Image 1 (cartoon, rainbow, N blue to C red):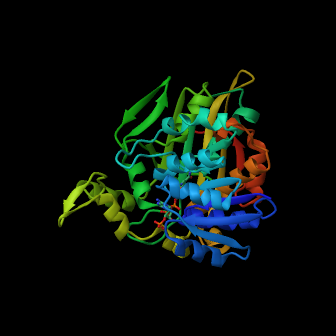
Image 2 (cartoon, helix red, strand yellow):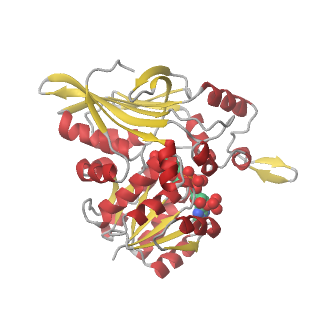
Image 3 (tube, protein in one colour):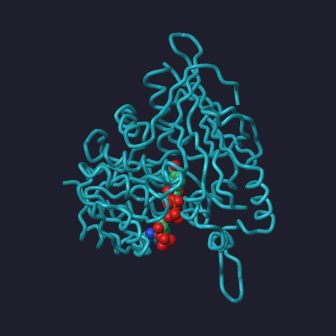
Length: 397
Ligand code: NDP
């Protein structure tokens, strides 16, 4: 019996619940808990497998501990917001339950993306014989596993890594984000950092632009360099990497709106006084933007997320590109969500399967590249996200 507790009933939580229910031979009982229980109930009503629901404020450790003691799951999948990572890890430690998430902890008042806070839990998880798996989404997540696959099967040494994330889909809205707008805009407006020769190089947000010719009929698109958390764990665990960069596509329309919103102060994350009360402009903006969950039926087109690893094989320079193509409309037909939530939720469920079946096991806090990539990718393919491996030559970015 492997009972699972999913925390967070947003776009990603919906996909995790659907996919865990599809793997009911592993997840024999499922509870979905979130701040607003009605959202959990709405998701549960879409799924033919029984999904129990609960209300929890995941900022509150005693509330979480009560829920975990009551439910006694084997694993918590945290797909609430990055702000809740540490409180949920604390509750897991207190109740002796394994933990998995898809995004690194962020304090609310600074958009800093680093694993230090969560890595600091390693000894406490190890001492209790528990496992925490960090970043089991697509990026971070599958991109870490693709890099591990390149290191295992295709290159003796990875020297350069480009992680490239394209959303070639369109939702037809003037401006909307594909996942939580607050988290998305904090990430996109943060200063860019990439890894070069043993250190981080900081440049202005979205200041470096290239064009990349994407496969599967997507074709050339503009990509912008930005910081992304998986680079931090990858350069730590695969120290041969001399240069690591993360790239994402943005439409001109998205960037135009974002620039205006930034210029007028709507992306600020500090408090401002409004009509006698304190508000955070970015949180107010989130309240007026389209709910990413509402974009599901509107979004058409594909995503293409992957890594180009460049390095040495048998003394020769060699490059390999490993990627997945996902179709927004197919995802919506299957689980009522667009591909951004789908590509995050499916790897979270597969990470859970790896842990609960003992295929990936360890005591302490781990990132995805620390485990054998192949069983994860085999299961991921079966569950909807197959990958393509191409050996060839790509221009330096
Ligand atoms: P949503 O905003 O759609 O959903 C977040 C959910 O968490 C909501 O149900 C929300 O509840 C709930 N929640 C927020 N605060 C609390 C709290 N204090 N206690 C309990 N529940 C809470 O976000 P997404 O589904 O788009 O994203 C979920 C996670 O996935 C985020 O951490 C995001 O960073 C991550 N992500 C990772 C990606 C990857 O590839 N690795 C890609 C995309 C997202 P309520 O409905 O009441 O607000």
